[in-house]
Length: 299
Length: 299
Image 1 (cartoon, rainbow over the protein chains, first blue to last red):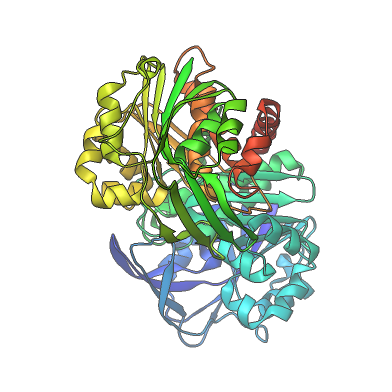
Image 2 (image 1 turned 60 degrees about the horizontal axis):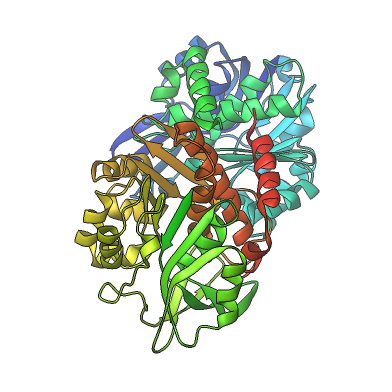
């Protein structure tokens, strides 16, 4: 089963109470691809600047990620500089430079047109909309977004939501998007706008999976040291989809298993800066933590 | 198995975005007794003023709660007036008048001296310490506390912690008490100060149960309408202990079941103002929600 992931590729500079990392590879698509590639065949659709170190591209290729859809554009790579304080759940964006991935210049290789799964990772909804016009996934369309787009491009976002099967969204953003203060009411309202399945990511508090017929809750994998939460949500979605693509059918039971695997994948990401930890783990590492999770939640 | 609960009995005035209640029965011991009495035989040790409506005492007695340890003192009952805003998890205390339960005047009926379980529900640690000197539980000593005592009576609190088997504490308070920002590190540090088992209550995010050999996480029961969170923590502990007392032994498995039952009990409490909902439910209601919880968490 093949997964096509469209989203940002970036160079991040991150500061947390536990250290810092400069110009480290990041972006929603980078995290999601690295996570999904642990389980499944992955294609990346994104754009970077000429200054994006080619060693990072080689790293993605070594993970069997198809990078023929990563366009190298004139100019600089998208950069994000952020800082986390004592409350490790909230990032303060210090600076950001324009994203390279644009609706007008979106190039899609021919063999990218019919993936089994399409993951519209967090990026401008206009880019996501353009991709949706030209890519026809065979099985599943999955969407992620963030507060920036809810505030500034709600109309575009809502029109994509109507075409998505699953929406990933964090707790605060689900409340913003729905206007509801209760998470379950928020998810129900979001489902009225299209996606039949909503996964609400709650950071250190785990996640909810809601659909018209199911409600599933999973706590986060317990960690004593969280060094850098950047990319946790993107790798949650990547792990979720990578795992789901290994199952024969999309059933409520498999969606639950995928949610746990997403939470487990994210638990590795936050243990080190940027993609460092995520790059090093394999499926056995994830399965092991999955089993500990099962044991930890049993009663 | 008998449970003795010592803590406050109050008249609460509560305002939330969903309505208000005036002079409604409250206090840590009231909630904990009502919850524990659904499962087990309960004795109440507390004090109220002459203005405490006797119909509330009769209500407790109708639930088979032994109120011979509820002293009626000259003067007014302890009153708390609080308000919850959009963030339903945080109460703003508008006014509070002195608690009636005092170290100097603590009266303990003879048949209260050797309960199986002693629950020191949230009240002044000096009162808790005095009770601990004069009451010798046969099986288990359980402690609850709050930010007020961590800030103002830390020394007394720490000396009781050394004698407690289980500590109930909320998320923010566990960080205050330990000086740690991570919940698992916080629980470990608290365990060094005595209680071998720590239950961290996380409100709408559920709870953690930690001991030297076990880690258990349970999400909160999902609710679309939370009318009033007052007493959620006290009824969590009450439900936990009431259920645990019905089991033959205190094993890790039974502690996990008790944690789920605590979460389920609290989920009823918050559905209406004060003790209104808690007064109306029976063991079947709890068992039913317990089963739904099991189904909701299965993967």
